[in-house]
Each structure stands twice: as structure tokens, then as C-alpha cells.
Length: 418
Image 1 (spheres, rainbow, N blue to C red):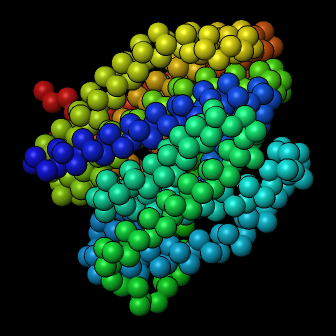
Image 2 (spheres, rainbow, N blue to C red; image 1 turned 90 degrees about the horizontal axis):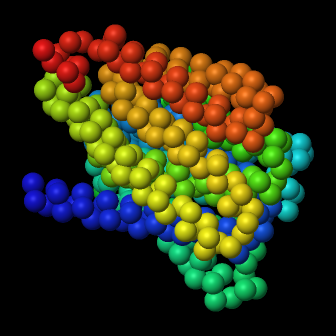
């Protein structure tokens, strides 16, 4: 038990360093890059993140549950099949992603970095998910540190001491090197585990079944992630590229909450929820959901208070009036992020039970709500339309998933027992 708690402490510490690194990077980019460049960086990151779902089809949502159903001697065959599917998806979608540049959504000068990073990000993301699923959270955190954290520290130090390095190309080069290091470490760890079953033939019928299951979830994921992609493009349309730089800065601060919850709460609790539900251990399942709710509330509350206190002096340090002038955006974006975080509690409780339909429905409805609300708000409050649309959309998700959990979960698995 002591070793487990120590491992969790180290894991949270590594994730905390990753979070701090990302936080430092976004603020130093805001200080050293022009607001328009930061806006391009925000669009680049959002487009990369959205593209990952096309390259993976969210197949891990199916394969992860399948791993729990079979012995480790068969895991190699499952991963081999997922790898075969990945090659097919690369052949289909990588050329199609070129339309991003044909349509002028991103400038052509970042095209090379885009295709390199979208592949590296996808591979390291899948490795990290796999390591979490097989209870190698510590290595998953180290992979995440290399992928999303330590390179940001190096780039920050370089830009601080070397003014000539203050360019978007240098940032993307550092990101690429970090992703390569994360990929090599993840492959090394996976190889050292000694999984068997690699000699099994690729089961294309199993893949087809998984794609059918994952594709339905993918629609929901594309809807929810679309909110974190379309919001930037829509805000740029309403307020301009320079103001988008402020939006990217504030959203980068707010989403640090989700990163910390993913690292310190969700990654530890949701595998246990799946296991306890499949073992029909209602008491353990209820305990897991209570922990999920309590820790999410506490961390979200503490983060919100600290963020509201420190944001003004941090903007003063940046010494760029444009960002301070857009400060009115921050409370709205923070509120939207907290609503999103709270919505993840019933999300994981439903996902662990295999109840995917309410998740799918809530995400699709949320995108419709976002589009309709933002369009309506933009007629009266154009600069606040996107944040207000996000708040209403995430509130819809929270209410829908919470009601679905109460309605669909058997009495013995509900967190509040009479």
C-alpha cells in the first residue's frame, strides 16, 4: 500500500512538472512572440489535436476494454491489429489533411511541421493510453513529460537567453524533439513488458467490429473536441488574429485544470471503475465514483481561486496591453472549463458500465447548442459569444450525463444509497 501511494505521489509530481512546463511555455510564448504568432500557434495546436481523432478513430475506447477481457498472452495480437488499422487510417487521412492548407485554415509555412507532429503526437498518445490501461501510470507520466513538458522548459530557457530563437519554428522544432524522445521511451517500455501474442494473424473481422463500436464513440468525440477547435477559428473570425492570441493564452491557463485532473485523478480512478463494474463489485464502484466527484470538486475549486488571483499580476508581467484588455474573457473560459471537468465524473461512470449512448447523444447535442448559442450571442456580444457558447454547451453535457447516470445505473451502483 505504501509503495502504491509513493508511486502515485511520484506520478502526480511528474504530471505537475508537465503541467507547470506547459503553463510556463504558454506565458513565455505570450511574452516573446507577437500576439498574431501566438494565435497561429493556438490554431496549429487545436488542428493537430482534432486531427488525432481521424488518425485513431478513438479505437482505443474499444481495444482498452478488450484488453481487460483477455489474458496478457493475447495482448500482442490486439496491439498488432490496432497497428494494422493505424496504417490504413494514415493512408486515408494524412493526404486528406492537406486540405487544411489548401483552404487556408493554417499558413503553408507550418505544413511540414504539421505532418511530422500529427504522426508523432498520435503514436505517443496511443502509447500513453496503453501504458495507463496496463497500470503503468508512472511510465505514462514520463512519456507525457517528454511529449508535452520538458521540451517546453528547454525552449523557454532558450528564448529567454537567446533573442534570435524567439520564433514559431523554434517552438515547433522543440516540440518535435520532445515527441521523438517520448516515442522512443514508450516503445522501449512496451518492449520490456514482454507481451506475447504478436505472432497471431491480424483479425480484420475483430477490427471491423471494433471500428463499428469506436466509430459511434468517435462521432461523440469529434463533436466535443470540435468545441475546442471551432472555438478558436470562430473567435478569430469575430475578433481577429491578434485577439485570438489572448484567447489562446487564457484557454491555455484554463485547460491546465483538465491536464492536472487527467494526471492526478482520472488516470488513476477510471481503470478501477471499469474493473470493479466488470467484477460486479458495487461497493468498490460507488467508492470510485465518490472519489472521482470529490477530488474533481476540490481541485477545480482550488484551481479556480488561485487562477483568478494570479492572472492579473501575470498579465502585468507580460507587459502587453492587448492581453490585459481582453481579461474579461478569462472568467468565462474558466467557468466553461470547470463545467467540462465536472461533466467528466458522470462520463467515466457511464463509460465504465459500457453505456455509451448518453455520452454520444450529449456530445452531439452540445455541438448543436454551441453553434446555435454562439451564433445568437455573436449578434449582441461578439467578443463574448464564443466563451458564452462554451459555457452553455458544457452545462448541457453536465446535466445530460448526470441525469443519464441516475436514470440508467442500477440502484446498487449509484453513489448515493438510502
